[in-house]
Each structure stands twice: as C-alpha cells, then as structure tokens.
Image (tube, rainbow, N blue to C red; front, top):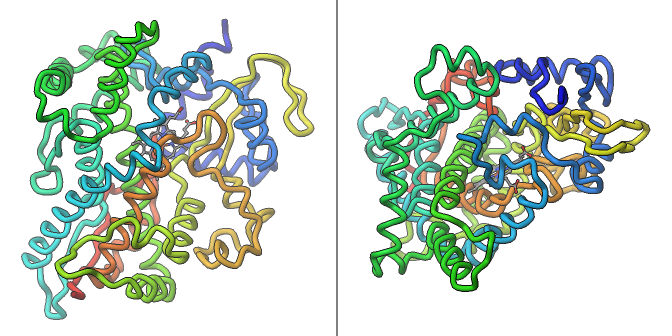
Length: 453
Ligand code: HEM
C-alpha cells in the first residue's frame, strides 16, 4: 500500500538541511502545512499534544530506517501492542530509583573527563593560562562512555583513547541502514552488506552477554544490561511468551547507544555555545553553582547536590527549547479517520509534529530566538509548547537518565573550569545540520578552558 512506504518527500529527510526547509514552510504558511499528497506537518502545540498524547498516533514508516535486518526495537517499532509490552519490560531500568545505581558510572566517567581535560589544557596553554579544548568532541566521548558503562557493561574508554571500535561500527551501521531503506536498489547494487549487521559488532555483543550469564562477579553490577538480563531470566522462569531474547537485549543495547549518546552530548555542547554567547547568563550560572560546596576530596558533583538548582535546570530547558535535537519533526501516521484541531484527516496520513517550530514560535514565546533561561523561572511565558523529549506513550524513556548525566557534567565542568569563547569557533557554531539529531556542521566546537579550583 502506497502510504506504508516511505513517501518520496521523505527521501529528502536524509538531507541534512531539510529541517530548515520545513521550518521555513511553517513560517510562510502557518501551523499546518501540506507536504505531499498524504503528508502534513503541524506546529500548533494543542495539535501536537493531540497527535502524540490523546490520539497516540503510531509511528510512521520513516522508523523503518532504524530497523536493522527487520528487527524492531522500542524506538523503531510501529506496532503499538508490541511497544507496550517491550516498554513495560524495559521501563524499570530507567526509573528514578534505578538511576541512583547508575550514578557512580556517570561520576567515574566524568572524573576521567576532568583528567583528560587537565592534560589537554596543560598541553595547549596560552599566556593567560587557558588551554584549547574541543568540548563538542570531549562530551561526545563522555556520553559514549556513560552508555558503555551502563548498557554495555564496560567503558569504551573513549574519553581516554577515542579508539574503541563499537561506537564507530554502530554509527556506520546506522548510516548504511538509513541509505538501504531510502535507496534500496542502489544500496543492493553498490554497498556490500548494506542493512546487515556488522559481524564483529555482533560477536562483541554476544561475548558481553555470555560473560554476564556465566560470570557471577560481573552479575554484581547494577547497570541497565544486568537489569535486562535479570528480567529475561525471570520471564524465562515464569514461561512468558514475550521474554527478552539475547538478540532483543543486543538490539535494545545498540539502540541506547544510538538514542542516548549524541542526543545528550549535543545538548551539553549547545549549552556551552549558548552560555558563551550570553556571558551574563554564564555568570549567573557560575554564581549558582558556587553556592554548592564540594566535600573534602570531591571532584565531581553528586546528582543530589545539584538536581534542584533552578538556574541550571532553566539553562538546560532553554537549550532544549532552542537547540532541540529532534528538530526534524516526529513522524506519526493516522490509522483511522482522525480529527486534529480543525483538521479532519482520513486514515493513512503521515503527520509530522514539528516540535522545533512550536518551541520557537512567537505565539508561545516572546522574543523566541533569545536565549533567556529566566523564562523558565519567571513562568510568564507559555511553557507548554515544549516537547524536547516528545510526549505520550512514545516519549523518551531516557529523559531522567539524560537530565542526570547533563546536570552532573555541566555543573562539574563549570565548577572546575573558567571557559572563554574563540571568535571563529563561535561563528562556525552557527552552522548546523540535522540527520538523526541536530548537530554543529563541523562536528567540533573548540573553546578556551582554565582551572578555577
Ligand atoms: C538530551 C537528551 C535526549 C533527548 C533530547 C531525547 C529525545 C528523544 C525524543 C524526542 C524521542 C522521541 C523520538 C521519536 O518519536 O521519534 C526519544 C525517544 C527515545 N529515547 Fe531519547 N532523548 C535523549 C536522551 C536519551 C537517552 C540518554 C536514552 C537512553 C539511554 C534515550 C533513549 C530513548 C529511547 C529508547 C526512545 C524510544 C522510546 C519509545 O518509543 O518507547 N534517549 N528521545
């Protein structure tokens, strides 16, 4: 059926600048735009909420891009019953309670980051005692190690060495599988093993799971991987039909690396860009963070010390609003005749929720393009047009995980270092592109850093 396939207008969604074209269309034609014969884009906050929450529209065929060898995951499935079951199994691993057990992993990786930054700064000192650091790249490595520690049972040591094969292999798999869905014929002809799993990666993941199953000591780790293995064994003992197989554990683990690393690290990177653009806000954040004293010998914040800092949370929210990593819209599909706002839609219409346009609309936010964290504290703006983690049944399962990791990293980095902009880098950081997540065009952003304590 025509509308089950990826419509031709989506072939362009692989284009890194398409997200801007969608925004321009909304600027020109308003909150509802017809993109093609059977697809629309919406940016009205009530209609988005209706699509994602009230109507709970299923994901559309674009998500096949994320199904390797046809294997669906929590993120990529279009089948709502299957999703409900899988989400019920995986959710407890992301509960606030379980997140506490993940904190030591986040802290130890952040400690490694500080050591690495100290070394890089020392190696590039200028007369003012500042060193130059590619903060974009460093926080990418931090986020990969955090996922390594929590979902793969081991750090990839990307912060220290930047050379583990797993992150690169997964990124390459993602790229090839996207190409094979959008250009099936071309990829069959020209790309060897397009859409197939990388055998070295599969072997690595198999070994990780085998080690966990047979090594009692490694079962002591309270991480996401152990949680998935335990629930799989428990289901087997209770003879559940829908128990997690080793293959399912592997695909969900790979998913966490894809969904949970660049999203978090790019947001931390954007926080640094915004703060360096607005020194008065950076100063305010320093003042707030300095109200929290470190204990003797402490090098990294505990989440409890900072999770309620109002300005830190306002800075993160304001960054998520302006620099939404899902700026390319959330893709859904009607399965029956559906009314969204004033629109009466037949079945099989592709509905794209353009959360970025909603989040930067002057209808909801006065002076929408200004980075103004105070709006999250004063509460005078309409803060409901805010969907950085999506909403409804398919919202981000990793939201609390990401918030915890971002708060620890940002607060610790600012407690430890003074930061200063490099003019050319600030200029370059205005160029963005969007493939799966929003990123700076160069995939790099250098700043000056100097020890404060
Ligand atoms: C700042 C960080 C993050 C942002 C802004 C973010 C944003 C999002 C958004 C917008 C969605 C919905 C996507 C869609 O409908 O296509 C989503 C889903 C998801 N995210 Fe995140 N995410 C972040 C971090 C994480 C982390 C750290 C993890 C895991 C460790 C994660 C795992 C997932 C998963 C598994 C889904 C699919 C959930 C489902 O369909 O049930 N995310 N995220």
